[in-house]
Length: 324
Image (cartoon, rainbow, N blue to C red; front, side, top):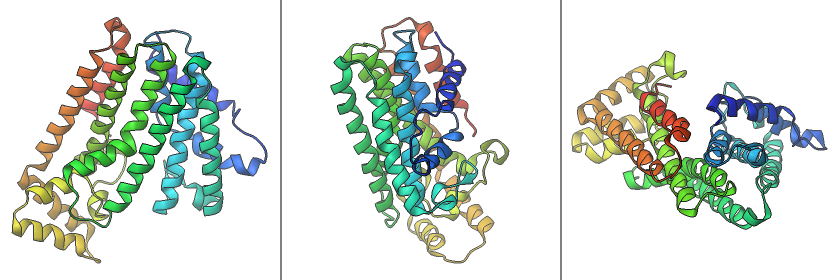
Protein backbone atom coordinates (compact mmCIF):
# COMPACT_ATOMS: atom_id res chain seq x y z
CA UNK A 1 0.00 0.00 0.00
CA UNK A 2 1.15 3.50 -0.81
CA UNK A 3 0.77 6.49 1.49
CA UNK A 4 -0.96 9.64 0.27
CA UNK A 5 2.37 11.47 0.17
CA UNK A 6 3.97 8.71 -1.88
CA UNK A 7 1.13 8.86 -4.40
CA UNK A 8 1.38 12.63 -4.56
CA UNK A 9 5.10 12.35 -5.34
CA UNK A 10 4.41 9.77 -8.09
CA UNK A 11 1.98 12.24 -9.66
CA UNK A 12 4.42 15.14 -9.32
CA UNK A 13 7.15 13.18 -11.10
CA UNK A 14 4.80 12.14 -13.89
CA UNK A 15 3.61 15.70 -14.46
CA UNK A 16 7.22 16.92 -14.45
CA UNK A 17 7.84 14.86 -17.60
CA UNK A 18 5.47 17.22 -19.45
CA UNK A 19 4.61 14.52 -21.98
CA UNK A 20 1.38 16.40 -22.73
CA UNK A 21 3.44 19.22 -24.31
CA UNK A 22 3.11 19.31 -28.10
CA UNK A 23 3.64 21.84 -30.86
CA UNK A 24 2.80 24.60 -31.25
CA UNK A 25 4.37 25.32 -27.88
CA UNK A 26 2.29 28.49 -27.51
CA UNK A 27 -0.91 26.38 -27.35
CA UNK A 28 0.33 24.07 -24.59
CA UNK A 29 2.45 26.51 -22.57
CA UNK A 30 -0.62 27.84 -20.67
CA UNK A 31 -1.53 24.23 -19.78
CA UNK A 32 1.95 23.68 -18.36
CA UNK A 33 1.59 26.98 -16.50
CA UNK A 34 -1.67 26.06 -14.74
CA UNK A 35 -0.35 22.59 -13.85
CA UNK A 36 2.87 23.91 -12.27
CA UNK A 37 1.24 24.75 -8.95
CA UNK A 38 -1.58 22.27 -8.62
CA UNK A 39 -2.07 22.33 -4.88
CA UNK A 40 -2.69 18.98 -3.23
CA UNK A 41 -3.49 17.08 -6.47
CA UNK A 42 -6.56 15.69 -4.71
CA UNK A 43 -8.31 14.15 -7.71
CA UNK A 44 -5.41 12.16 -9.21
CA UNK A 45 -4.38 11.07 -5.70
CA UNK A 46 -7.90 9.73 -5.12
CA UNK A 47 -7.75 7.88 -8.45
CA UNK A 48 -4.55 6.14 -7.42
CA UNK A 49 -5.86 5.49 -3.90
CA UNK A 50 -9.01 3.82 -5.23
CA UNK A 51 -6.95 1.66 -7.59
CA UNK A 52 -4.54 0.82 -4.76
CA UNK A 53 -7.39 -0.55 -2.67
CA UNK A 54 -7.38 -3.55 -5.01
CA UNK A 55 -4.03 -3.58 -6.82
CA UNK A 56 -0.49 -2.36 -6.20
CA UNK A 57 0.65 -1.68 -9.79
CA UNK A 58 -0.55 1.94 -9.69
CA UNK A 59 1.55 2.88 -12.73
CA UNK A 60 -1.18 1.27 -14.84
CA UNK A 61 -3.68 3.96 -13.84
CA UNK A 62 -1.21 6.84 -13.67
CA UNK A 63 -1.83 8.24 -17.16
CA UNK A 64 -5.58 8.44 -16.65
CA UNK A 65 -5.07 10.00 -13.20
CA UNK A 66 -3.00 12.70 -14.88
CA UNK A 67 -5.81 13.15 -17.41
CA UNK A 68 -8.26 13.80 -14.59
CA UNK A 69 -5.91 16.42 -13.14
CA UNK A 70 -5.59 18.11 -16.54
CA UNK A 71 -9.38 18.12 -16.89
CA UNK A 72 -9.77 19.67 -13.42
CA UNK A 73 -7.34 22.46 -14.29
CA UNK A 74 -9.12 22.99 -17.62
CA UNK A 75 -12.35 23.68 -15.70
CA UNK A 76 -10.51 26.16 -13.46
CA UNK A 77 -9.02 27.90 -16.50
CA UNK A 78 -12.43 28.47 -18.06
CA UNK A 79 -13.97 29.37 -14.67
CA UNK A 80 -11.38 32.13 -14.35
CA UNK A 81 -12.31 33.51 -17.77
CA UNK A 82 -16.02 33.55 -16.90
CA UNK A 83 -15.34 35.18 -13.52
CA UNK A 84 -12.65 37.50 -14.94
CA UNK A 85 -10.51 36.37 -12.00
CA UNK A 86 -7.15 38.04 -11.47
CA UNK A 87 -5.38 35.33 -9.49
CA UNK A 88 -5.39 31.54 -9.17
CA UNK A 89 -3.26 29.94 -6.44
CA UNK A 90 -1.49 33.23 -5.90
CA UNK A 91 -0.46 33.68 -9.56
CA UNK A 92 -1.92 35.51 -12.53
CA UNK A 93 -4.69 33.62 -14.27
CA UNK A 94 -4.03 32.51 -17.83
CA UNK A 95 -6.29 35.11 -19.44
CA UNK A 96 -4.53 37.86 -17.48
CA UNK A 97 -1.01 36.58 -18.20
CA UNK A 98 -1.80 36.03 -21.91
CA UNK A 99 -5.33 36.97 -23.05
CA UNK A 100 -8.87 35.58 -23.21
CA UNK A 101 -8.43 33.96 -26.63
CA UNK A 102 -5.35 32.08 -25.46
CA UNK A 103 -7.19 30.94 -22.32
CA UNK A 104 -10.19 29.67 -24.27
CA UNK A 105 -8.21 27.84 -26.94
CA UNK A 106 -5.64 26.37 -24.54
CA UNK A 107 -8.52 25.32 -22.31
CA UNK A 108 -10.08 23.47 -25.22
CA UNK A 109 -6.72 21.79 -25.92
CA UNK A 110 -6.47 20.83 -22.24
CA UNK A 111 -9.90 19.17 -22.32
CA UNK A 112 -8.99 17.13 -25.40
CA UNK A 113 -5.62 16.19 -23.88
CA UNK A 114 -7.39 15.11 -20.70
CA UNK A 115 -9.56 12.65 -22.63
CA UNK A 116 -6.52 11.23 -24.44
CA UNK A 117 -5.01 10.42 -21.06
CA UNK A 118 -8.20 9.26 -19.33
CA UNK A 119 -8.86 6.62 -21.98
CA UNK A 120 -5.46 5.04 -21.24
CA UNK A 121 -6.85 1.79 -19.81
CA UNK A 122 -7.47 -1.82 -20.75
CA UNK A 123 -9.88 -2.16 -23.68
CA UNK A 124 -12.39 -4.10 -21.61
CA UNK A 125 -12.95 -1.02 -19.40
CA UNK A 126 -12.82 1.66 -22.11
CA UNK A 127 -16.56 1.96 -22.82
CA UNK A 128 -17.41 2.29 -19.13
CA UNK A 129 -14.55 4.73 -18.57
CA UNK A 130 -15.66 7.04 -21.39
CA UNK A 131 -19.36 6.82 -20.49
CA UNK A 132 -18.56 7.53 -16.85
CA UNK A 133 -16.34 10.49 -17.59
CA UNK A 134 -18.79 11.95 -20.10
CA UNK A 135 -21.36 11.99 -17.32
CA UNK A 136 -18.91 13.68 -14.95
CA UNK A 137 -17.87 16.30 -17.51
CA UNK A 138 -21.47 17.18 -18.37
CA UNK A 139 -22.40 17.42 -14.68
CA UNK A 140 -19.55 19.87 -14.09
CA UNK A 141 -20.89 22.06 -16.92
CA UNK A 142 -24.41 21.89 -15.46
CA UNK A 143 -23.08 22.89 -12.05
CA UNK A 144 -21.27 25.88 -13.51
CA UNK A 145 -24.44 26.99 -15.32
CA UNK A 146 -26.50 26.77 -12.13
CA UNK A 147 -23.80 28.73 -10.30
CA UNK A 148 -23.98 31.54 -12.86
CA UNK A 149 -27.78 31.61 -12.73
CA UNK A 150 -27.77 31.77 -8.92
CA UNK A 151 -25.72 35.00 -9.01
CA UNK A 152 -28.84 36.98 -9.93
CA UNK A 153 -31.24 35.16 -7.59
CA UNK A 154 -31.98 35.78 -3.93
CA UNK A 155 -34.41 32.87 -3.62
CA UNK A 156 -31.95 29.99 -4.05
CA UNK A 157 -32.98 27.13 -1.76
CA UNK A 158 -30.71 24.94 0.32
CA UNK A 159 -31.60 21.97 -1.90
CA UNK A 160 -30.75 23.90 -5.07
CA UNK A 161 -27.45 25.13 -3.67
CA UNK A 162 -26.33 21.69 -2.51
CA UNK A 163 -27.27 20.22 -5.89
CA UNK A 164 -25.21 22.92 -7.62
CA UNK A 165 -22.06 22.33 -5.57
CA UNK A 166 -22.52 18.59 -5.92
CA UNK A 167 -22.44 18.92 -9.70
CA UNK A 168 -19.76 21.59 -9.87
CA UNK A 169 -17.35 20.15 -7.29
CA UNK A 170 -18.31 16.73 -5.93
CA UNK A 171 -18.86 14.72 -9.11
CA UNK A 172 -15.27 15.10 -10.32
CA UNK A 173 -13.98 13.92 -6.94
CA UNK A 174 -16.48 11.06 -7.02
CA UNK A 175 -15.63 10.23 -10.64
CA UNK A 176 -11.90 10.13 -9.85
CA UNK A 177 -12.52 7.45 -7.24
CA UNK A 178 -14.90 5.47 -9.42
CA UNK A 179 -12.39 5.51 -12.27
CA UNK A 180 -9.55 4.14 -10.16
CA UNK A 181 -11.65 1.34 -8.71
CA UNK A 182 -13.27 0.47 -12.05
CA UNK A 183 -10.01 -0.04 -13.93
CA UNK A 184 -8.64 -2.01 -10.95
CA UNK A 185 -11.42 -4.55 -11.53
CA UNK A 186 -13.52 -3.69 -8.46
CA UNK A 187 -17.05 -5.10 -8.33
CA UNK A 188 -19.74 -2.68 -9.51
CA UNK A 189 -21.32 -2.11 -6.10
CA UNK A 190 -17.93 -1.14 -4.68
CA UNK A 191 -16.91 1.39 -7.34
CA UNK A 192 -20.38 2.87 -7.00
CA UNK A 193 -19.89 3.08 -3.22
CA UNK A 194 -16.61 4.88 -3.80
CA UNK A 195 -18.43 7.31 -6.09
CA UNK A 196 -20.88 7.99 -3.23
CA UNK A 197 -17.97 8.38 -0.81
CA UNK A 198 -16.42 11.02 -3.05
CA UNK A 199 -19.72 12.83 -3.53
CA UNK A 200 -20.29 13.20 0.20
CA UNK A 201 -16.66 14.16 0.79
CA UNK A 202 -16.91 16.87 -1.88
CA UNK A 203 -20.08 18.29 -0.35
CA UNK A 204 -18.46 18.39 3.09
CA UNK A 205 -15.41 20.13 1.65
CA UNK A 206 -17.38 22.84 -0.17
CA UNK A 207 -19.76 23.60 2.71
CA UNK A 208 -16.72 23.76 4.98
CA UNK A 209 -15.12 26.26 2.59
CA UNK A 210 -18.21 28.45 3.01
CA UNK A 211 -17.96 28.13 6.79
CA UNK A 212 -14.24 28.88 6.98
CA UNK A 213 -14.59 32.00 4.87
CA UNK A 214 -16.56 33.49 7.77
CA UNK A 215 -15.33 31.63 10.84
CA UNK A 216 -11.87 30.42 9.90
CA UNK A 217 -8.59 31.63 11.36
CA UNK A 218 -7.08 34.02 8.81
CA UNK A 219 -3.56 32.72 9.51
CA UNK A 220 -4.59 29.09 9.00
CA UNK A 221 -7.18 29.62 6.27
CA UNK A 222 -4.63 31.49 4.18
CA UNK A 223 -6.93 34.21 2.85
CA UNK A 224 -8.90 37.16 4.09
CA UNK A 225 -11.91 36.23 6.18
CA UNK A 226 -15.30 37.50 5.03
CA UNK A 227 -14.61 37.72 1.30
CA UNK A 228 -17.81 35.82 0.47
CA UNK A 229 -19.84 38.31 2.53
CA UNK A 230 -18.37 41.41 0.90
CA UNK A 231 -18.84 39.91 -2.58
CA UNK A 232 -22.44 38.78 -1.89
CA UNK A 233 -21.41 35.28 -2.89
CA UNK A 234 -24.12 32.64 -2.63
CA UNK A 235 -22.99 30.31 0.15
CA UNK A 236 -24.62 27.73 2.37
CA UNK A 237 -24.55 30.24 5.23
CA UNK A 238 -26.23 33.04 3.30
CA UNK A 239 -28.93 30.76 1.92
CA UNK A 240 -29.73 29.34 5.37
CA UNK A 241 -29.81 32.87 6.79
CA UNK A 242 -32.42 33.98 4.25
CA UNK A 243 -34.40 30.81 4.99
CA UNK A 244 -34.41 31.25 8.77
CA UNK A 245 -34.48 35.04 9.12
CA UNK A 246 -37.57 36.91 10.21
CA UNK A 247 -38.93 39.82 8.19
CA UNK A 248 -36.72 42.49 9.83
CA UNK A 249 -33.58 40.32 9.72
CA UNK A 250 -34.20 39.45 6.07
CA UNK A 251 -34.64 43.13 5.24
CA UNK A 252 -31.38 43.97 7.04
CA UNK A 253 -29.51 41.25 5.16
CA UNK A 254 -30.97 42.36 1.83
CA UNK A 255 -30.05 45.98 2.50
CA UNK A 256 -26.38 45.05 2.90
CA UNK A 257 -26.48 42.96 -0.26
CA UNK A 258 -27.98 45.87 -2.21
CA UNK A 259 -25.44 48.46 -1.03
CA UNK A 260 -22.99 49.52 -3.74
CA UNK A 261 -20.71 51.44 -1.39
CA UNK A 262 -19.96 50.17 2.10
CA UNK A 263 -17.26 49.64 4.69
CA UNK A 264 -16.18 46.00 4.25
CA UNK A 265 -15.31 45.41 7.91
CA UNK A 266 -18.68 46.79 9.03
CA UNK A 267 -20.58 44.62 6.53
CA UNK A 268 -18.70 41.51 7.63
CA UNK A 269 -19.39 42.34 11.30
CA UNK A 270 -23.12 42.94 10.82
CA UNK A 271 -23.73 39.87 8.65
CA UNK A 272 -21.64 37.61 10.90
CA UNK A 273 -23.58 38.78 13.96
CA UNK A 274 -26.80 38.01 12.10
CA UNK A 275 -25.51 34.52 11.27
CA UNK A 276 -24.67 34.01 14.94
CA UNK A 277 -28.15 35.06 16.11
CA UNK A 278 -29.76 32.67 13.65
CA UNK A 279 -27.55 29.74 14.71
CA UNK A 280 -26.03 29.44 11.23
CA UNK A 281 -22.55 28.29 12.32
CA UNK A 282 -23.97 25.40 14.36
CA UNK A 283 -26.30 24.35 11.53
CA UNK A 284 -23.43 24.46 9.03
CA UNK A 285 -21.13 22.34 11.18
CA UNK A 286 -23.95 19.83 11.67
CA UNK A 287 -24.39 19.61 7.88
CA UNK A 288 -20.65 19.03 7.39
CA UNK A 289 -20.61 16.31 10.05
CA UNK A 290 -23.60 14.66 8.40
CA UNK A 291 -21.80 14.40 5.07
CA UNK A 292 -18.66 13.06 6.73
CA UNK A 293 -20.74 10.39 8.44
CA UNK A 294 -22.34 9.44 5.12
CA UNK A 295 -18.88 9.16 3.57
CA UNK A 296 -17.90 6.72 6.34
CA UNK A 297 -21.03 4.66 5.67
CA UNK A 298 -20.20 4.50 1.97
CA UNK A 299 -16.65 3.42 2.77
CA UNK A 300 -17.93 0.60 4.97
CA UNK A 301 -19.37 -1.05 1.83
CA UNK A 302 -15.89 -1.61 0.41
CA UNK A 303 -14.95 -5.23 1.13
CA UNK A 304 -11.17 -4.96 1.55
CA UNK A 305 -8.97 -5.09 4.63
CA UNK A 306 -9.56 -2.07 6.86
CA UNK A 307 -5.84 -1.30 6.82
CA UNK A 308 -6.08 -0.63 3.08
CA UNK A 309 -8.69 2.07 3.75
CA UNK A 310 -6.44 4.00 6.15
CA UNK A 311 -5.82 6.86 3.71
CA UNK A 312 -9.55 7.34 3.15
CA UNK A 313 -10.27 7.55 6.88
CA UNK A 314 -7.36 9.97 7.15
CA UNK A 315 -9.10 12.25 4.64
CA UNK A 316 -12.37 12.14 6.56
CA UNK A 317 -10.55 12.97 9.80
CA UNK A 318 -8.64 15.78 8.09
CA UNK A 319 -11.87 17.37 6.88
CA UNK A 320 -13.36 17.04 10.35
CA UNK A 321 -10.49 19.09 11.76
CA UNK A 322 -9.76 21.32 8.74
CA UNK A 323 -9.17 25.00 9.33
CA UNK A 324 -7.78 25.98 5.93
